[in-house]
Image 1 (cartoon, rainbow, N blue to C red):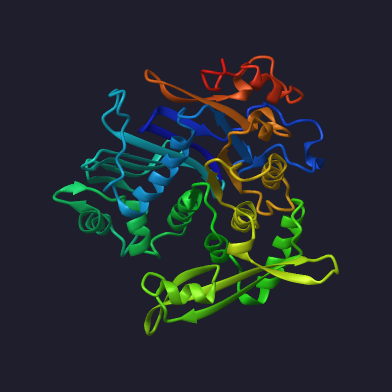
Image 2: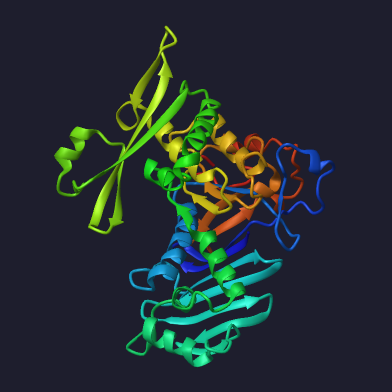
Length: 423
């Protein structure tokens, strides 16, 4: 479970931390019987918020905070090339640093990457304050996950061969070791997998059906899963009684045979590997809506359903039964405030957040999204050239309680983080 994500010198962010701490001190009375949980408990017994909603004026840096998580993911998977975006208005730092803190296997860990446009200067994995892996200036200084057959020299060789170019480290070592030595250590595998899981869903506000379909279970349970999805979407006052999903393999290439594929009217296409080479799988999604006579009428998912419904399809499938951390920029785009509120509630509801580990960090423009949230679940974002983008947790404001009308006070300028013309 994610505890915090620190960002230093990325676009408008000089030095700031996205924290998912529960900031209300002791647990509220009767919290165990609350239908919407006020906090989640990680494997170490720490209280973490299930949702964190960020509000602020345009150009305050809200999107940059979430984009930093995507950049961190790219660093892990691809390296530093085209991933260095320092603050151009303040030269306080000449490197970018990301540090993620998370719980795994009943212990707290942190992973840090510091780099510039040319090389990775530091890569560290710690358990609390104990260094487990330490790389400085491209040299492996410390690596505790060694055993017979997996010596320190082997790890240094991977660093040299897989991660360095012209004597400079340009790729992170940890994912390369996980790939190169899958049997190295059970705890090491758990840590790296947990780390990747915390960043895999970093996303913009676009949720095409391809995202949801990729996450569908195997055929045996797929229709039950889709039926559950339809029941959830129906709660959002959408007159949809069900969905059908059919897939077929084709030799047509979406990049070169566009006209032929369009004639088939698929909802989306996937690239898949086969013994014969790369093929494409076409998915056909249809929604069923009853007419005045009670007859089920099919609607083409892409051409006949609203953009909001299409987005909900991918978004809800992404949320269901998963234990990931999801980052969404402008969650409320194309969605009614009541629907946004319901989505936020899903992360607090054990019936949807069945793993008890799923967390959501999102930005919104509409302050009505604050309705039903707790003080620990809201933060405001504002920016200055001197300090860069800063996060102001609602819980840090004096005199604020969960019974406070957050929306009213925000609209009155009580918490700042509104466009200057409004003030």
